[in-house]
Image (tube, rainbow, N blue to C red):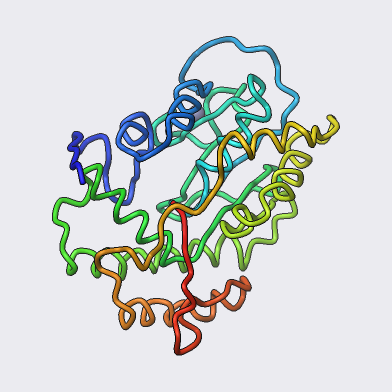
Length: 271
Ligand SMILES: [Zn+2]
């Protein structure tokens, strides 16, 4: 595995900068990299034609399919999609650029306002899948310096608390009627339906182009790419313990436990 180092000031744990630096060091296909380069960002400072899309706050737990969904929407809406990275962009919420219609945020500090007059897309995933993926990413980009089982355990125990609070705030107790919630598994297994709902939500004035949605799905070749079982620190006992600590939350959001039965059920995941 290649290890890349980028300056600390750009990426800090707990204040994750997912800007250009991250994209550069993140694993992606050629198609995905091209889309990321073409993304119209709030910091581009270009005067753009007005867009008919609603302004969306995309609040996602890290590694829960944000990039996947964003690339689908970017391909579908093409030059109507004006993006703000927040961490790698203007660092303000709402975005400082009034033309932005899709702002990403991970709410690391859990202080982001849930404003009933804004529109939200919330994304989450089973925490073990998100955390394994995030740990690997943080190591690859140099946020985590020491890659040992101990550092993984420490990372996991700290960030499972962030997941718990994130889920409570944005999913379990989220009463905002201007919010749609997209679990990662649904995005992967029911992509077409999820995209239809999301597109209708973002662009209610325009008829849905079903053929274009099908083309987008084909073009991005959406599939699961990795499995937590392949993680070098995969340890059923520890993983079960972590899952057990969020059992109530998983039940409330109706997310199937991986280690519910005595036998592991061979669940795969994707980044
Ligand atoms: Zn911005």
